[in-house]
Image (tube, rainbow, N blue to C red; front, side):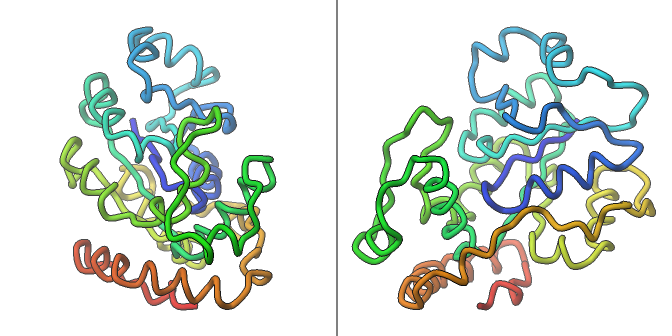
Amino acid sequence: MFFIIGAQRCGTTYLYKQLDAHPEIFMAKPITPEPKFFIREDSVSLGKQYYFDKYFKGLKEEKKIGEKSTSYIEYPESGKRIMSIFDKAKFIIVLRNPVKRAVSNFFFSKKNGLETRTIKETFIDSDEDLHYYSNTSVSPYSYLKRGIYLPFIKKYSKIVGQEKIKIILFEELIQNEKYLQEVYKFLDVNENFSTPNFSTKVNQAEEIEFVPNNVIEKLKDYFETHNKLLANEYDLKLNLWNL
């Protein structure tokens, strides 16, 4: 069992589709809404069989099964609940340039009627995220905090063990099929499988082209130190995050 636990607006849907195309992998259905089963204790109390019956109908003899719920990374308790049932579970975290992630998050919240401010009001006139929720599992306004990846990863790794976590970069994932094959290797499935639709990119609107330069520059400055700390902690090459 494995879980794609985040982060939001980082291409996890793209990864889900690539993994679901692998003949040895079965992904939880439907893709949306995400299960988010392990966020709540009362869900987990329904039991393992309920979980399988609800999200894995059609499961045959696939070697590995997986779930994508990007809220999990913001709920370390979900890791404890997962490990209580699946003690050998593995976890995948997808990271994206936090500037692009923040912009994507803003437009996603705007599109869904959750954000009423302008992009200038959000990023120039304010130095902090809003912290209230809007009938969602996580705050739709965590544009900045959600892109400071290191604390989320460290909290989760303390619970499940760093050896069970694979960190991948979205920018590498969409450019290099061999990078995807490293994910297959981590999951212990046939790493030589060539995904038929690899060249079909996830639906990622390039909203950043329409964002004022002063917003981009402020976001770059905001995340610069955090990105360096992340790169040093996990030996990540973040050259593709340069705008």
